[in-house]
Length: 378
Image 1 (tube, helix red, strand yellow):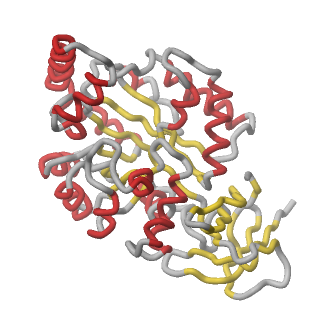
Image 2 (cartoon, helix red, strand yellow):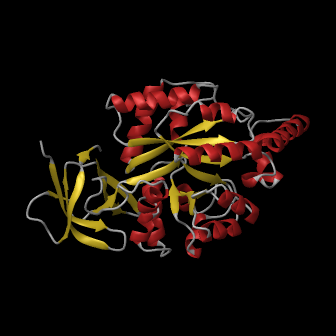
Image 3 (cartoon, helix red, strand yellow):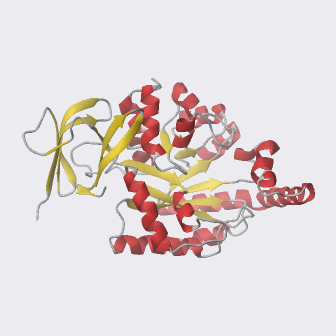
């Protein structure tokens, strides 16, 4: 049976302009986008209508699954709670990050992340989910067992993105020991001696494993058609390495030169939407607005606060960093294209009917309705 939805009297955010008009969706796909007021349909009362947001990097599922140190929640329950918050933030496509590789930063047991992937697949089969969930494997290349964890996902079709990361001291995000000391010594309450031993172990592991693991994972990603992301690039050498491995997404570059070079090489430069909302990085690295002003900010990620993904574009538009269509592209069209999801991320005929009704009031956008493939999900 044919299903049809018409949304009218909306400020429709297209890729290049905002147009007052109506959108028609039939059987899950957009069939018409027209200017002017349609005589029939659901009245949007002049609210914005934007494409469903596309989230490439969120650790948010972890906070539901492990809400306290040492606590593990029901996986299905955690997934449903995560999904509910994701969708009500306007996100209709989400790449859930799963950690690959054990390290001394806590992490999860061998097999635990594969179990989570199976739980996500079960939740989808049982129609428990409102968003479209895909998987992003966060591969800690300096970990001894990262390949073992990665290979456990050899048959998981939902894996569409993998990031190559090295969080060892002196590398990328933690180029200075001041940052690393705050994260690992101060927060953990380690003595000077214990911290020195911890640093030595992490540095030795990076030297031993990182290059080989980076090469092996990148090769397998190319074989399987998985998009590759680099993580926390800081130098021109890091960018050259990313180019060598065919990286398409540069996540959270930590220096302006790395961001500029990554963008120039055609990679999509991703920064955190919380960085925009807060006006600075939580780890003391570069501010995302600086990249916006330079014209080298391509994608935003909610990272650890789902609602920031709809909030940040309106901040950028209000501050004059870019117009609203350009700001919305950071969370819709560009992330979708970067990972090869060409059927979504824009309001155009023939694409999926993934839409979000947003009212912008008092400086804070309110997500009023969400549709995924034409079905109301929030």
